[in-house]
Image (cartoon, rainbow, N blue to C red):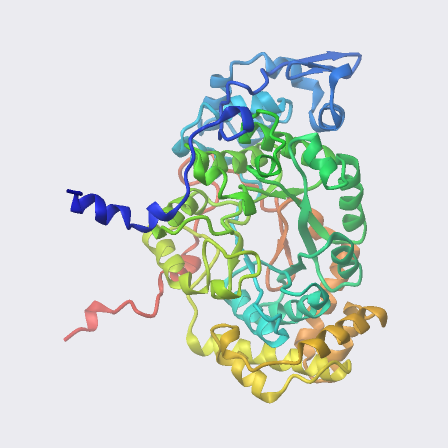
Length: 554
């Protein structure tokens, strides 16, 4: 006879997930692998001759890049001689400032960094994240996509997402040739919700760079780096080629960060017997050495791998912390779905929500997950109220805010009408009044009329051949009476000349003021310091519509 209790438990969502036992030899181990290299550094005449147990003549491409560009050598021998537990204790000591920590961590090697993180519990990592986040004010980023690449829906969803508080927005495509239309729909829609939103279109690298150069996007993050040489080479890349691409973005006034994340090397079969955290440390030291201001990490699209091994979700938080210990902007993932369990997916995100990161999600789905073209998110549009109430319950600022239905309808309609007007002005296929009306009230693409996708794709290709730029979008909006949106887009274009938003962890407020690690530097040193929720912000977070005024109950 079978236990009824175990029958019920066996049918719980959490038991539909996949789990594996540790297998260090192939990299199926989150942290502290017995096969990880031992920390070491030898410096002769200003050059690293040994790195983590490997002599210079035996370096691979990643070792050379990290040794020559990724480590501040001035203090390296001194801090490498420190006990890793001593360094770990400094991370959680409120009497030791962020700047003092950086004096140590910027001179560590990847193996030493992994060893330090391995000394910390999840709670201690969260304490360190609270202190080491680059920008004082936390924020959030979302995905804006749909199953049919509907321009009017992307614009409307972008407007709503901006109103709800997302400081950055990212789209991608169901069909590659739609990329130009998705980029301009996101660009226009986001500004309709709140001026100053930064947007990107994540597609093939050459197309993505071209869209950015033409002023149709304002940042990029899907430039991936990896923790072993074979995985880099498999993608026809090296640390140097990625650095060149990063400089191409920055030189055109485009904010950019790399993407990395634990599990990618395991999936490619080239983990070289090392732990996920150690390999991610190598990625982050490459990022620092390249001069890139930030990283999207936290396993990201590989989350199923660390999510399957013991301590894997702890490792994800650990790699977020490593990014901060290297003074990088951290967009801390919480995007791709990895579990059937609502309890487990919330637990995975609380570790970033509570202490706050530069971008708590680097892909909260602003649409229902059936419309998410990034393979589904850990959070989607149906979770907005849950997210807001968790903020209210815990008195934390996780970047979003409650909104009223009439406000959402208003900005969705404005965005839909604006993209309709731009399509008309530039001679693209018509967006009908029926589509505008549907997008204004829609939940997802199932609520939007069909479009001629072949005509759209042809027009999108012709748009690129015509050399249309962000300035053409500004002119189109102006000609159709959307003066405020034209002004917002023009300010985004002008920002690329000053480059102020290229500083670490930069976002913009509604007046296009830059908020970054330069002018909003995290100064946490214990209770009452660092980011504090203002009275105005707390009123915004706590004032949910379904809260009753008990004093008025008769």
